[in-house]
Image (cartoon, rainbow, N blue to C red; front, side):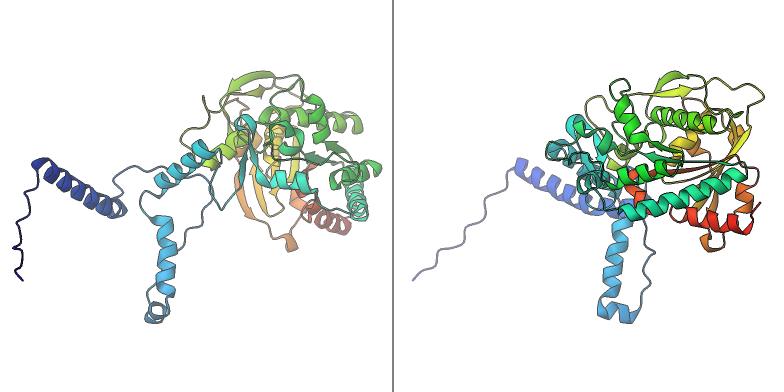
Length: 414
């Protein structure tokens, strides 16, 4: 049986040979470009928003090499430092949003994209749907402690008030996705119980959710479309309500300011915090819309920089502090953030311009040693203590600050 002789391969057409070489060079470039960027960082990359915890570079050891720990740690470390990571994350986020109307990736702050591109922090939607448990007995105990604190502070000439900051999902449910169904509002929820008990104990309390629901028809900027917190303007409206309560309880004081002028500006501070966390190149046609920012007339000289205040609160308190500073009545505001960290705002250095927010000017005084906290320098020469709690955090009512203040005041009774 004769074998068929091998035929020489036909010559590769010049056009195909050029294409093969080009594809090979492109493949080599794609393989080598990340290494080149890792070493030189010569190409500008897209920065990422949000908090990331970078792992230290793993230290080699033979035991870790043989049991696989070193390889696993190197893989986790590379995920944080790999070249073009920011660009690739932006690309993935943009594809997720443009193709599927989903915002962000797994991990970190969960964001829900509602109707007409309204953004919500998913945790607030879950809380609105599930309605956290908060017994009437616990609400009554907390309210009695708050009332006792209010009385002790009043004996020292210090005003006290509780501000319950609103949830965007509760105030503006009409922009939630059609698949989200909130239960009917009830008078027997955690929110209603604590509000009712505080009022029963005669504690100055501002129910901002009810205030905002009443203002919805006339005030379209209570929450920014691209942020999770109340807007700078609506925080000003809430502060003026608190100011009216304080004036009524303390004759001879002045907290209410004249009506401000409103200047339209692109979102500032937290007004587009969810959009920044989304890590998108392009968000909806036209991008985020301008919002109103209050420009407040200065108070009379005798009231200028007259007060000092302590504010205990969560992230919503920063916009409230900005509103207080715009009034021109405060010379210093100390913020005990989640009762874990202290920030000081020397307000005279802050001009309440519409293109700047006070949250950017705070001095970080470090973490609080809650177990050994000295309240005396915090309460001396203060005229106001304000507790600002978002309704999502009502179960943590002050994060232990009420009990801590009560214990300190009991030791230094006037």
